[in-house]
Image (cartoon, rainbow, N blue to C red; front, side):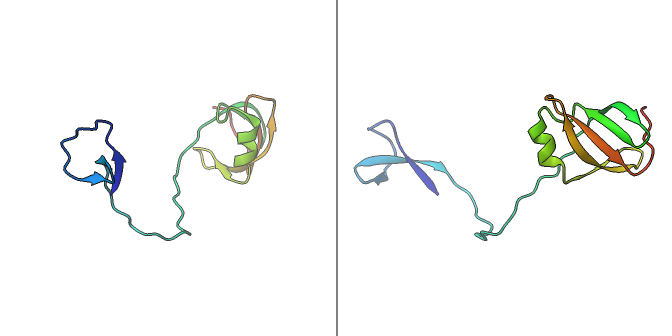
Length: 108
């Protein structure tokens, strides 16, 4: 339980915190108190090929700045046609990136 001070001095709440009355702010349940617990979210980011040359591609509209491209560079990419790849480097200042795939990529 978490209590906060009630802004109105004359409150209908019978219980008080010291000299001032308190109101219930929230209630909840704690599942575990393990400090090593990790909460992961799975999201799907989509981008569009800008230029394609065999197995290399410039991908746009997945990120908005080069820092995001560098942050996600260790992750694997995949296309909806089953090609696997990785991010090589950011290009420019607007989040475009250079990618290398395992097979020839078609710009569809």
